[in-house]
Image 1 (cartoon, rainbow, N blue to C red):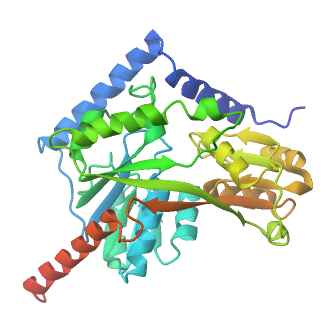
Image 2 (cartoon, rainbow, N blue to C red):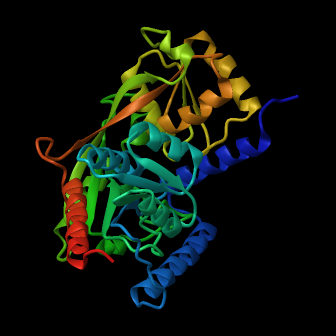
Image 3 (cartoon, rainbow, N blue to C red):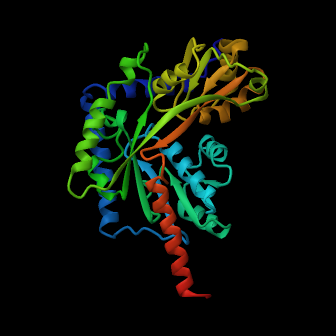
Length: 364
């Protein structure tokens, strides 16, 4: 009997075929579905823009870090970097996410000074965070969550994804069209370090040049929000369990990724360690059940596994210390590394304005 979960296998297969379809001209069914999705998204935005649907104000400033596309735009590392810098500046900061356990655990790891909340009702969670001492709340993946008023809307666009087909889901990766850039207060152009030559280079490099060109044109349009660049670099392999902590020189043979663009991670993993011989792509936010954990143990052997931070949070719970597990760290390098990044300065200004407003109002 096969030990492969058929539902998980089907999800991985469907997701892989959808990503492949995004690089080609979609068929009629996908185009029809995309037209319906675009119409629904447009109507919803119109209702908010006209005031028919109202955004609710939280007790503290809200900073949203979101994207136009599904996955891969750098929202989580950008959110974590801003949150960590605000905490280091002495600002009690909370991070609010969708509620995926892997995302919440990743933020707790990346920004240990911040409280992390997760769930569908972002307004309730932001209010709770304020009641528990937060002076500012950051929404991870909040651009489409318009029910909660944002004081600073930061939009991340990955140059590689920006170079793909400009089509709405499911014909392309877009939740909203490029016209929605006008709703942002600031756009972060995300660039990722990729290998100069690699077997997967063709698959992962088709977008960046076209994406950079498009981003340049968008930044020059009249009325466009300010653009700032950030590079996300792969760092070192970090031990995720006790079995890995006892290994002085990591040589993982297996790379595992349950993210939207696994091929980018696999290329970066090979940049960090040349020992990787095999890779396993999983569905985004995949669960590590017993069957999958047993399969990964056998394929990795004593050499171990390297994965993303989000996957490490779940993988370690699944495999324990039977096999060494490392995650590939990421470093965010802003356009002007010698100064406080512009998004952080803007967030600090919001906190200062809130404090000034509170001082003027005086005690209730």
